[in-house]
Each structure stands twice: as structure tokens, then as C-alpha cells.
Figure 1 (cartoon, rainbow, N blue to C red):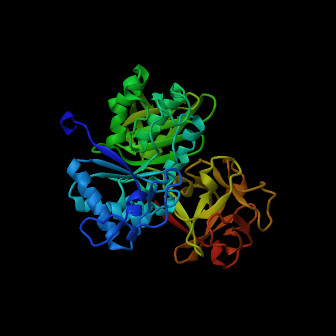
Figure 2: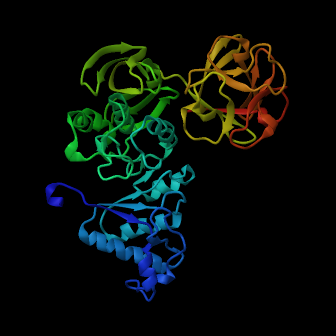
Figure 3: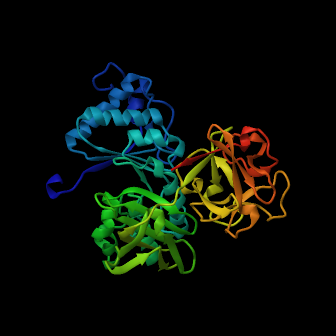
Length: 468
């Protein structure tokens, strides 16, 4: 197999075979028996194995013996199932990682199924090479559409050698022998298939082709062999969502150059123009290339816009001709909780709640302050381009009125004055009401509503701006 330029992978269920425990076989290299190292956990969908009690050192010895065998076979890739969800088995993840290390052979450790809990992000990043972020993905738009948020949320944990895995690519001839539906070519439209491949590429996701390779048609081969698109997946950097919502913009750096990759997505049910501000990338003007077609698109300045079909995507390379300062972007942290001013669920809709949330590195927690005159500023969400707004307009002057985002319109309920309160903190005072931005009831929980309130000395009205 290796002589043919191929890699060798195996799929394991977590733990030790139940039959081995029933027979109470010895554990290689120890005085232990199988019934000393198992626990009572098993996969709900394939209960042939018992989980491992990693507090017994013989459980690690058992895993070491398994991986010594796999190393002897020349295995390159190991998928371990029933370990990432529905319960994240941290101790066993540690055990599998250590067994690979002790085997002396490099092997990719892939964890399944999904969704791996985001709370385990730091641990899984340090101990696995790839991990499922959703359950099984099949060929329907709803499942694909849900992955935009999942991939955005996992961005802080993506690193070289540590890849959030959105599952197989359900393109080509599927379900050849089951298990979901009759044998068929993918139910995703051609535009949706391009969206999937673009989303995987701009996120550097593992490319695990789900269709039967020998039945690929010309269209499938074109999707999986486009060298310019594959280069985005294999060698880009600083991959991130720039604009959220239904018309999304993602970007990545081209290593060794000042070029940028840009992916535009239209999640809506009709064709739409998707645009981005080049200044957000520090670009004044650039020559643009369509990576799917290879076509040069000429020079663009100020704004880069393309018409994108329903559920479609475009992928481009921008080569800057001129540069411009990137607008200053800030996080805004509440003093009492340390949590950030956040547009709930990364919404781009008018009226979406503004709340506090633990820092997650996403653009719905980043803000730009733009001069509105008279010592006031508008506070604009990087994610949506919409303004921090006291809901209800200029007549909403009462305590407790919720703060939301809304399309910027110049009203005084969208204008804020920064009042220094010492130690780097400020109050944000609404021009129309002269009341302060506050976290309701001094709550410290994620999702606590931000409101306006009569200015006082409480720290739930104190905010720290940090440039990012």
C-alpha cells in the first residue's frame, strides 16, 4: 500500500472488546486481566466494547499493546469512535494519544463522533489531530448550512496538526451499501456542492471524500482536483470569518505573501450580491482571481462584490496593489464580569440583542468606534456592520431599555459618549437619554442582557476597550 503512495488507516471503537472481558484474557506485559481494566460504558449504537478505566495503569498498557501492533502493520491513521461524543472521554483520549507516542510511529488520531463539546476545545486540540464537530453529515442543505456557525465557533482551536472535522464530504455516489437512504448521487445542488468545498477549504478542514471514488463524474472530479482551491485548504493561514449572517465573508492569509484568500457565501434562497470592505484586510486596491474558474477579475478598489447564486459560494485570491490602514477594532469588556459586549448568536439581523459573553475571538464581539460629531461616536459591530442601538428609537429613555444592533441611521439613540472613570475604564453614555450602557442587574452569566440605565458608580456600567 505504501509503495503505491497510499496511506493505511483503521477505524476502532473505544475500549476493549466485551468478549475479551468475558473471557478475562491477560493484558500483554502485565499481571492484569481484562476484567480489571474495563468500565461499564459502551457505545449506544454498537455495544461490542467496554470503555477503559484509565485509573488502572494496566488500561494504558493494553492501549500500548494495541498501538504497538498497529505500528507493526504500518498504520498511518486511526479513527477512534465513541470517544468525542455524546460524552467526551478525556482520560481515554489521553490514553490513545500516549499509546501512539509510545508506539514510535507517527499516526493521525481522529476522534468521533460529533459534536465534540466546545468546552473541551483546549484539551482536544492538544491531544488529537482531528475531531468531529458535528454528528454524521449527509447530503442536505440544512445540515450543511448549520456548519457555518460550528466552524466559526471552533476557529480558536484550529492549528497546524489540530483540525476541527466537519465530517465526510457527501458528494458523488453515496450510500452504496447504506446506511442512509438508497444509493444515489448527492442531493446537494451543484452550487451547494461548491459551497461545501469552499467552506471546507477556507477552514482548512480535513478532506474526507464520502462518495464512491470509482463512480465520480466529471463534475465531482472537478471539485476534488482543483489545485488552486486545494492550496487554500492545505497551506493557508489565519483562517477566519470576517462577516457573519446569511451573506458571509471568510478570509485567510497566503503564506509568504501579502495576498489574501476571500470566500463569499450566500446562504439565502435567492441570488444575492455579497460584498466586503477591502480596508478590513488593509487593502486599498487589489487584482482579483476567481480560484474556481481561474479567471482574472481585474482590479478592485474599496469594496469587493460578487453576485453569488442561492446557497452558493465564490473563492478568490486578492493580490494587493495598494494598502490602507485597517480600521481600529476593539473588544469591550464589562468590569464586573470580565465578559465582552457581544451580539447574541452572531446575528446580523436588526433588533438582535446585545449581551455579555465570555471571550471567544469571534467578530460578533468586535466593535469599531466612528466619530458622530459633538464628542459622540457610533459603535459598529464588525460582524454585521450595524450600530449599537437603544431599542425603540429616540423616545426610549427609560431605565432598563434593552440595547440591540440596528442598521446605522444617525439617530441619537445610536450615538455614545465615552466618559473616563479611571483605571482604563469608561462609561458609554447614550446621547438621546444621557443614560449609561449597563449589564442588567450586574449579572455575570453569559447571555446577560445589556441595557441603558441611569449612570452611577457600579462596575456593571464600566467598560474596558482593548484594541485587537
